[in-house]
Length: 207
Image (tube, rainbow, N blue to C red; front, side, top):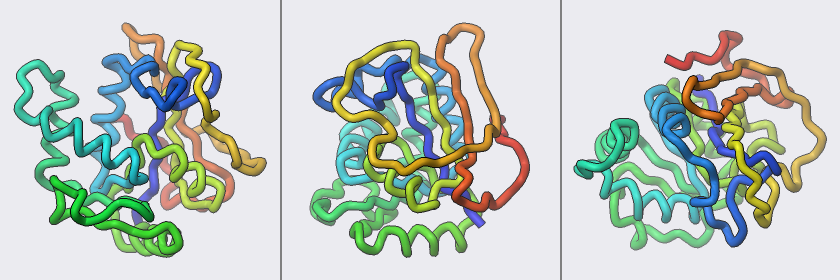
């Protein structure tokens, strides 16, 4: 059984992006990259909304052979290029827009998303990992379809447009782990929502 894992940076004032949807305003340092690479190592599938997926198509293909890219980004780019499966929940994305990774990308309409993700969660064993895609993961969280929530708390106030947890009903969480880095002010806090039965009772593996 797979886990649906959300990994999202959140500013101190509770946003996942700056004003106007500008993600470059988030304090994404080397710790951010290291944590993302570790989560990709545990994943067999990435899950996105349409907007985030379009952004990934623009960024990651150029990092595979980029000599200036950090090792973590080159690793993530290589997984995109070779073996990761990708699921995109979108009512607007078309197959013609998928210019890379087309043989490993499935597009799922919103009305079918919950059923499809339950199927994938039952059939697969590696993590199903969500990056970005705030609208998608908050919907999944509200409907009991997130097994782990990794919040990378970034040391910045960004005054964005939409707070991370807008629209989510009252919900409790169990703490699974906390991660820090000697040379970074980013803190990763990992929770299990109390509205979903986790596939495993073990702690978070950061190796």
